[in-house]
Image: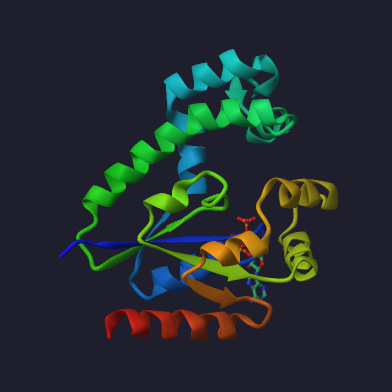
Amino acid sequence: MGTKFFGLTGGIGSGKSTLANIFKQHGISVLDLDQVGHIIINEDKEAQHELIRAFGERILNQQHIDRKRLAQVAFASSQNTQTLNQIMHPRIQAYESGWRNQQNVAMAIIEASVLIESGGVSRMDALLVVLCDEALRWQRVKQRGNQSKQRFDQIVQQQCSDEERIKHADYIFNNNGRLGHLEQQAIAFLQQQTL
Ligand code: ATP
């Protein structure tokens, strides 16, 4: 029996990681592609060289790539974003592919903030989308700390709209309520999968 791979996406602060953690607590295997990107930036020497060659030493802080600086440069223009994607996406996909081959279970989840924008959604068997109103998302991100409203707005601009996400969604999770409400939806989804 092959593993069914579910993509999981949603806007900044919508609750992707929170939902992914609920799934993990229920024994589901989860890969976070945003985290994979971080691992590549921190550990893949060849990727590091390509990024420095493309964007210059201004992305460095004490000889190491600083993700905040990289984001500032990479998202400054659509051409830069494209260059970043050309460097990162093949490597993220290769990592994902290796991880998929290790899964020996009925279902697994692949979480990513830009799964639709990157085209990664086409590699998924089905898509889970978390929705939460933007004002509440900002409240929660603000509470999480370490992010300005300006940066939040910038990221919202770079990401696709909920309308677009809904078009691609096979399952929708509403996270405007309490954590317990999200968990109830996760449990209902898991029960549906085992029927
Ligand atoms: P990002 O796109 O920035 O990675 P995300 O979509 O993964 O964000 P989370 O980090 O899961 O979102 O959630 C954003 C913040 O809101 C976190 O601090 C989380 O603990 C909190 N949060 C998520 N869901 C709820 C909820 N239902 N009630 C209260 N707080 C919540």
